[in-house]
Structures are given as structure tokens and as C-alpha cells.
Image (cartoon, rainbow, N blue to C red; front, side, top):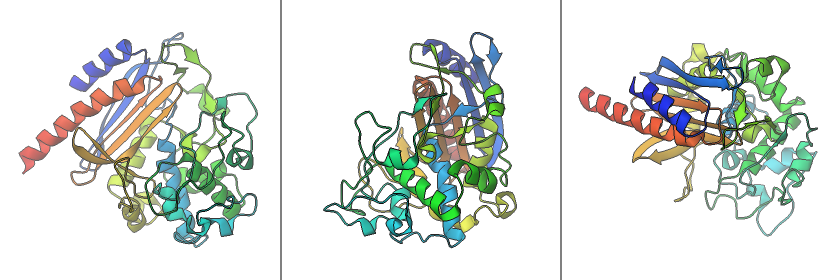
Length: 346
């Protein structure tokens, strides 16, 4: 009940209308807690089927699609990505672009630019992937290009995931959103998850709220792999279960369990700024090491923390820009309970 009380207090205090929390124990969903409102005007409550945008958690989920390409033999993890592309190519530079591989892109060690994306208001026409890679979706015109020698440092790059999105489209002749729905989400039973805002999803979506608590239009993204995922707490909790306990039956041939284990293994080099596997980030808040990802877009905030040794996890989704002020204290509370439980089990 402590988490429920905490959530109710924090949502009101920080202009975040609602929060959905899922806790995983022993590799299985233990409970879901739903607090506050999907929409303040209609007083529509958050439910387990409420749709949220999850910001950069999109990267973690999209990595499953990219890794499926390697299992299908369409690309190899350590091949130069540029050789597979026809619609757009990395610009020549002082750095060696043949060292830009899928392994390095997914682990933020490819030396690529563009940290993140702001998206566009829903209803505006989206630019193409090629236009995005050429900097047309960035106010400062920042293109995706090499800023350091690939494989020499960890440097977070949403731009790399946009390049991987193009790679997937080129190798499958499908749009990224359609491929992910057909080959990842539906086989995993994630029926309320999509890289698009479908009309059907809009009906059950939470309203996004800015840092002052004002409703805002949903953001839409050309860069779907990096930032454009919509999902529910239930779907994302089921996805987290499969990350903690990769079970062949549940995975339904989407990926092999050994592939997921590989994705959850650190890729060198790491730095003080960060460390990643393939899609999964290694985090160390409050001196407690977990893997997963956090996500922030205007109007949305989300976090997924997985502790593989104890098979515990927590997922928190918020429909407000100040959501990190809600999820971080909830995370702190969860860490205490996990540490206490592990002491008792020793």
C-alpha cells in the first residue's frame, strides 16, 4: 500500500494526472497498481488497457526487431551497416564508417550523433526517414553522422536507432511499424502495442500533460524506433517478464532465449556516462544495479527496471512531463523492498 499512497501523493504534487505501476516478482507479474486519471476533464481513470507513449523505452523494444533480423540471417551483428543501405548512406568523415555495425548501434558505441528527438504534433505530416537522417526533423538541423571513431566510447545516440530503423525497412521491404506489429507484438500477445497512433488506440489513450499540468497534443515521430512506441502497462509488464525469464514457449519463435541473454550482456566500451547491452541499458540508481530503460517525451515519462539475479522488476508509466518526479521515489521504495526480500532469502 505504501507505493499506492506514494503514487497518489506524487501525482497531485507534480501535475501528473496518472500513473500505472507493474511489479514483477520471481519472474512473473505480481500486481498492477493504477492511480489517477487518463484524462482530467472527463475524469477517465487509468486502467491496465490505457495507452501511454514510453519515450526511449522504444529503443529497448525495437532492439528485439533488429535482433530478429540477425536470427533470420538478413544482417550480421558485426557487418558494416552502410553496405546494406540504398535509400541513404552515412556521410564520409575522418572516422571509419565501415566500423558502424548493428552491435555498436544498439549499444551506443557506434560513434554516431543525435542524442534524441522532439517529434511533431499529431496531425502534422511526418517527414521521411531520409529527411530525418539529414537533420530536417531537428530544429538545429543536426544530421546523423560520425562524431567519434566507432567502438572507442559509449555515447548515447537516438540517431543510431533511426539508422537501424532504415536498415530494417530496407532488408524487409516493410514499414518499421508494420514489421514490428506483425513479427514482434502479435506473436508475443502484445495486442495493445504499436509504433503508430492508430484510431483504435486513440480511443483508449491517456491524454499527455506538460510540466504545468496542461493537456497537450500527442507527439508523433518519424524516428519510431528511438521514441515512438505506444503501449499499455499490461503489455509492457508481459514484455518485461520475457526479458527476465526468456521462455521458448512464451517467446513464440520471436527470438531465441540465448539471443535475449546476449542482449542483456554489456558491450564494451562503457564510460562514466553509461553502459549498454543490445537495446538494454545498465543502470545504477541508489547504488542498485539493474537493466532496462527510461523514457521521456513531452507529456510522458516511463521507466523499466529489471533485476535479473533476483528476477524482480518494476515498470512505471506516467502521462505527464514531470513523471520522473513520480517514478523515481516509487523506484526508491521498490529498491528497498527488493533489498529487504533478498536479505531474508539469504
